[in-house]
Image (cartoon, one colour):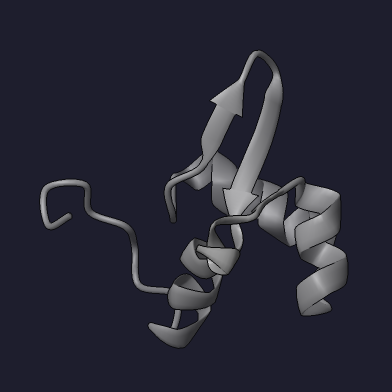
Length: 64
C-alpha cells in the first residue's frame, strides 16, 4: 500500500525529476488516471511509475 501515496503535480515533478509543465500537460491530455478534489489534482505514485514504464502509453479506462 506504500505506492498508493497521492502526490501533487509539484511533488511528482520533484520525485521523478520530470518537468512540472509536462506533467500538467499529460494530466490535461488524460494520459493516466488522477484523483481530482475540487481544483486540486493528485497523482498516485505507482500509477505515474507504471505510465513511465509503459513508455507513455495512453491510459484506456476500458482496459482497466
